[in-house]
Image (cartoon, rainbow, N blue to C red; front, side, top):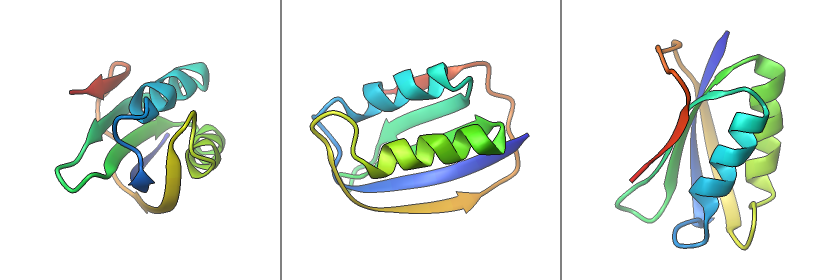
Length: 89
């Protein structure tokens, strides 16, 4: 099991980015969260199969919905004990 910490930069708040990311993560069987950051970016932590995490990263890069992702940063981290994938408000 792998865990990735992802920051998405661009027009990613107020455009259903977190909800679309959650839907895709659930579809892929991933656990973790997506939350808005005070600087206007979004933090995503995704845990599960490495191939599925990579699929989510590609989905995020495309800017789900009307979001416009300009850049992402990905770091790998130790897995945590997530029960599901949620949007943190």
